Image (cartoon, rainbow, N blue to C red; front, side):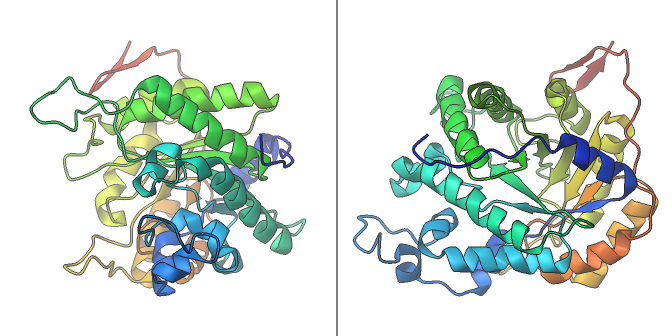
Length: 355
């Protein structure tokens, strides 16, 4: 590793103890908060990349290098709003996604810096009564292993499984070195991409000589109730549960009203903890999200009283105000209990098959 850091001790036991007592709060949208800052091209570039040869506005992950104070302040806002777990600003910080800006060589540095900033923010506000945790985020990348990007060539792929694995190993090791407590594979639209990430995480753990708890979160893309690569919620769960994650959940694409039935399905089968962080509704004609914090909290309160989840936060369109409202919505409620381990052999194609 070119970025030197210290890998945190395994927090699985502490997280498990807390999750058995209460619902933990995840943070809200990073992109939404960055958009509110009104940053322009020169803000993204900073001094270091003033002469970069491509446009880089919109490369939010680069801000951990060029505008670290802004990113750290967003983390602190979510922590002060009540978040127990904050996500690193590294959703697109893989070589594959950074290629859009011809910044592949910065992937390791960005992941390390993202974790370090989140770690600093957590350590500033954590107390013995309310520890705070950093979830090092691995996003889905801008490529897909299961679907051809060429409608005229169904067998074509623009990336291989092995290439994606190497990409994720680099990111995971940097997130660990930067001080992450958890590795979160997030917004999974292609289960094969997530399998590459999960395989890479195990390789990274072996290289580092240490393990961290894993959170996995898929995304149901529309009213069909399936991921983009075609799996139902249960089939998706069957595909990834073998890694013994701390939690499996759903995020993005849908608001809480549309997402509820799929959270219910996951909650009914999941042998680990369940996480969920929905969007603040569906985007309007301007691409903005209109679901206010109070309305969001009403949905979350019902989910909590129905014991559907163990970790809850927000995705696109959510803010610290939403997180504070969610915290109040779940306070005092009994958390969901994971299902007993089953002897079923869980198989999956596009549908689940349990033998």
